[in-house]
Length: 602
Image (cartoon, rainbow, N blue to C red; front, side, top):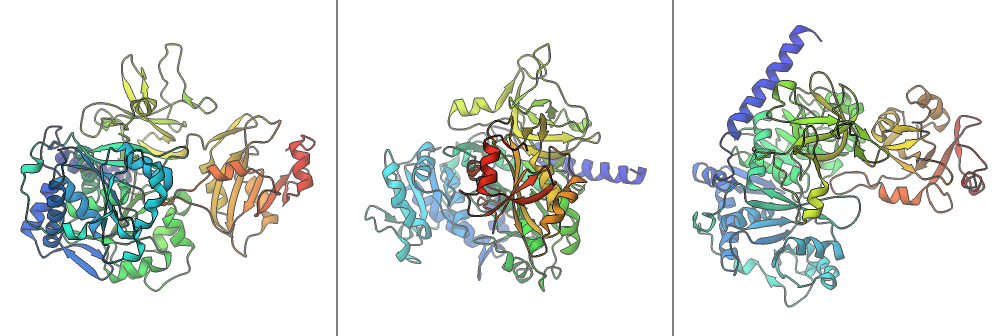
């Protein structure tokens, strides 16, 4: 790296982090100024300025404040005490923001329920938050009967927007129409929230998880403002910015980071009900967006789409998110004329957060040595088979050398943003804490992510713990295999995982692929031979019409792992890497039987 590039790197980092630190100085556990006070200030100063765009609607800051007041006054009419929780089950629309602002005004906290949950999972999420009342968008009222048998004590359900969609309502006479109660738009004043401090809970946000029922992560007002401050310092949004948001509001990236960037600076959030590839750039053009947020595979979906008239005809100056894969980074930025990409890393419940301020391709963030005392984030050696950090003869963990892969961990302290607020259940909280790490008595948060950190402090995501697997005595990172496959012409989407083969140690690599007509399976094996070690090359392939993802575009693997590689049990075409020919060939039931019986070595 040239001296000029190094100076530029440090200048961008230092100025960005200083802006953030100046904001963080005001965030003390016992401070009282929350996001409510910030929005109220903007409503007083610029009541006619747009706060939210949704479809053809424009909600000004004055209207946002009035609607939030109506929610607050309704909540104050209930027999609730400060700190009690109200659950919110609603799709993306302005009332989602108004509802949680109103609950904060009333001194309450909010459980942000995943709109995809059904049955037992839905009931569980409401009950572990202790919510006696649930605000339900009428568009989701029909899912409530599925959850009712699983409630220990059924909460009071309030249906909002019933006049807009009565056909969607569950028809349960015990459900109340919230519309009629949202009439008093006068400010309740600061009294109802007078006892609320930044250290108090603002939200329950649910981890997506891979198995079992959802876990509710505690999310304080302090953590909320800490998170927002990072984006304000890194991207410097202003009151003229319009930030496009097609991500779920019940999730931290869409509901807190994106909304916070807009509302904290008096700007506007352009709210989309659901992400649409075909409408994305038209929306960006229509609303004259200046920023947008992304997550997971959203960028790949846009890149795979055919060229559109507005994909470069826009005024976007910066985008931020996580999950933009290195192999498509430059191509995405060039095709869509994005001046600046700020990738970030941060778990909903964790204390490890960082931003890649300067756009270094592939990095999820940066924590240079000189900032480690303030943002202690380390990478420690990790045993993939035991799924635990390695400890030395002294019983302490071993920090990785530069570029060595290990688990990323964050030091736990009471400093702003460094505390681990945990879950509703103490046992689940303790599982995420690593103790006696570098000295006896210290405590660090386990991210559950394998990363490597280079000599300049850039962090690069490698894999989720559990996704990396052992095959032929070697560790296989699914992300590295994915990256290699994604560069192959004709492959549109990739999902890599390990499957159990009877009689074999470890797990064999398998890749689910979405391909187009230009995909040449005959040429795949030779191409991968030049990119991947022999143990990294997928043993099995599965061609699918589409890859299953979560609502936040994270690929689903659990079901694929369970289904394995049996062609008789899978409707998709399955191939195997024939060791004799070193080519991918169709896997028949007869061949599958020979592999399972250990009569063919793979």
